Length: 347
Image (cartoon, rainbow, N blue to C red):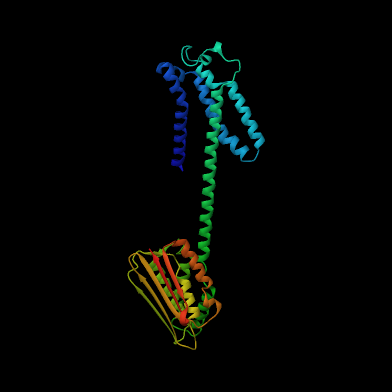
């Protein structure tokens, strides 16, 4: 912020030195450097300088934003007219050039005894209009950039809110079923009760506390998948076989948290039967510059939700669009009674 303000101040000072130095260059070309230096130190040049600097900032800070942008057009233009009359009455440019000797420049401007009958300082009026135009252009550009930044900030906040909402979409039935399964284990005094509680605790901690950012270590996501599969196995019978394998070295690769969980939820929701044998195959491969996820299961529930992607997978597509734009390939197939998902992420 300090650098930005400093650059603005430097730009303003440089701009004024250039604009207000032009009259001195003109005077120097006609009278010589010594005469131009004396004019630079004169009260007329100080009045010339203060007039247009004050006019610029008064219009930029007060008139234009508080009157024009508040749609007080009549007051705004009347104020400009009043300022124009004041500048024409002060004649800062004319007074500045009256300091020149009579044999330099135009005779009609250099002698106080030869002023024209109509006292209109055209150059001062032109500089007035130029100053107002420059002020208007700068302030309009500033307002446009500010509006653009606010829109971008609002869009970013909206995207972050959407991502947070989508990331929080974990199937509540999974939690209810898992708690019921753990309750059954506790009632039968199973040796797996404590381990199941620990795995559920790890998952909830990972979901609520450890994945506040957009990306987490792939190793942490794999650990969450392991816990999820182990908890799902609590409700499965011997008719269902689950194969989960990880190839490659996760290393320091990162992945969007819980981006794969909806695919697993879908597999355990529609690929499990208590009456027929079933098999769920899950593969996660880590390569140098990509991560590949594959999941396949047999479809037992041919409902509209099974024929198409569920809400969880729809939300996952939206998260992928946000976090991996043009960096992912997702293929979903439900042919021949088998549901397969293939996802490849560039990392």
